[in-house]
Image 1: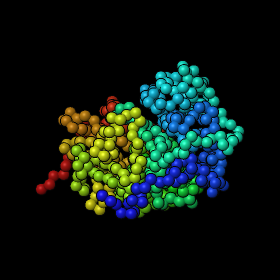
Image 2: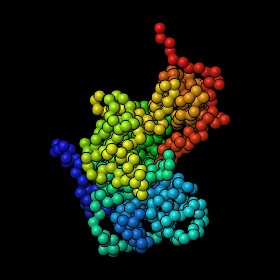
Image 3: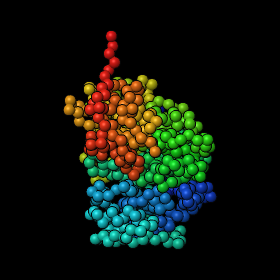
Image 4: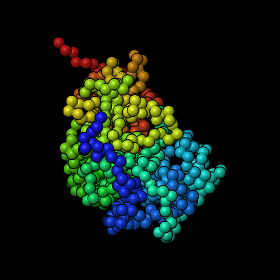
Length: 543
């Protein structure tokens, strides 16, 4: 079937100058060398020209370590000049960027070291001692960045040395064996592996371009994006790439800190930011102040789009946007500004086709819940596959569609709404409960800082609801009062039977809540049971 010119144009593979990092950076450094590209807050600022100079120094050091075009190179460090320059330098050489989560250790770390087929790692001194706890697999060389008081470990069969940069790089020192193509592998990013071993998502330059630069028509050269999530995660990587493509700038912080957020916005002059829903909630839970609108921020992408988002707009005076994405796809849905409905993910981009389907991949009627399936008219816009795992690749791409594992609802007007992760849906008393919707309601309580809802086994069959919450700073939570609060807001079958109050929730280094940890812990000795407390909540009788 042929398509119209608009769709055909959108489906085209972008040229190398538009989407390949080396050529993008060289073009910007040539045309706008003095314009700011990144401010490391608090710290140094690099122009586009200086960024290219730094990247070439790091690239020359990688070449001296034996890196060639197509090689896999592990990066294990947090946000900062070393990570940004190392990522860019790896791609500048046409090699493959393989970032590691800074929280990695033990068996999951060991698995990636063996799976990634990387002989070289650039790692932070504070993290590298963890390598002594595991089999290094195919790793043969570690180059150290950063400072740490911990001793450098002795690793059998692995050379460990400082990562030393040259002072200058000859113009012809970094020539390529061949041109870097848009469909070449740019990165292998490992998923969280919550239901098994992590899977290495092979991403092309086309995918990263489609995920970032090509997905945002509201971002321009005048913008500065505050990057407060880790750039070893695709959710932040795509914003760095978007700003590089449009000639804008980024303000980069080492990590998201509620207390420092607005100072970082003001200090970097940031006009836009990506916030996980929980980050927006943290900021809203801070005491209101006279400087709440004294900042340059104009646009906030809140993912997922929670109920608190509207309050965020009203309090801080920013336009709200959202985007739906995951490591394997490329921002197929977006919405904003002027949005307000909880769970909204938006409308499809022109180069994507989306379907909400049942367990047999058959499309369900609009308004019904099913799994979101995605495919693209643009070659290479989705993952190239899971590295070394053909079985998982085939399963994910069953019937020619990528299976997201997310429950969605498409409305009659065409808009898509996120419902929950399929594995996170709770089944209680014959009803399906969206943990996402329930968590939003729990977070509406002024004393709750964070909330997770998970299923735990019921003696009656199906599931019971366990809510695990953290209190706002300096506060305390009364579980009985929280039950009463929720009973006035949600259906009776959604009100949690079990409530556990903890100081912190388990998270990955990218800020994602680890629900599988809380599910496995289940009902602990310190968990409140409203049934045992004699609190019964029943459906309202009719007639």
